[in-house]
Length: 233
Image 1 (tube, rainbow, N blue to C red):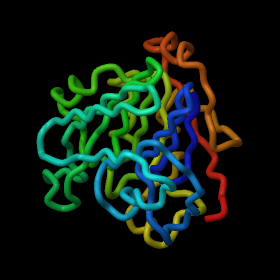
Image 2 (image 1 turned 45 degrees about the vertical axis):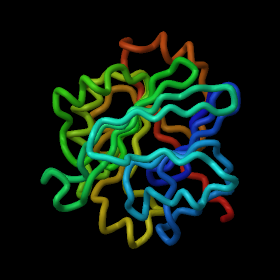
Image 3 (image 1 turned 90 degrees about the vertical axis):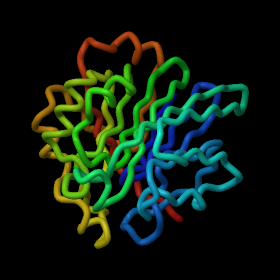
Image 4 (image 1 turned 180 degrees about the vertical axis):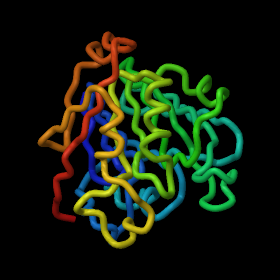
């Protein structure tokens, strides 16, 4: 399997069979350039411009998104694989969504690996939300602060969930455009300082064997900082 970071909070996840899942594609003019990708599924955590640009994906992917204020499950059968996405209603702020609106934490399993994508989570998780998430082998977590949780809150969640792998997202980089500068306060260094095992990669893609990830669960968490690779739009 592999995870590719396309910048900001957008990832392309490819299963062993070649199924492609695109998460939170961003709109134009945010500083990052969106590559040509043709996913089978597009997953959207919420409907802000820097997360909901499903139209940028080529082909005709299945779009999975939150449709109510209740816990949801979406069953997707495609390319011989069956994926059950669980949507956990959360908020983009600490005011029950009154400032920034709703956010959905999504969990799913692919190739036997449990994924958790926190989207633009803006508050600490409750006990019931931790219970709903359950096991998370791979965690995608915002760390940029200001409009989402920051380094301290993110570290608390990582320590509680104890995933095998963490991919930080939604933080300041040299590519963050003017529109992102107003919604982010931190670069990765603030979060990294709170983590014990951090690996900075010189690539935007992390390749792995699913069995290795599952075997490493509860044996310690490793944070991977992927490198954004500009591409032609």
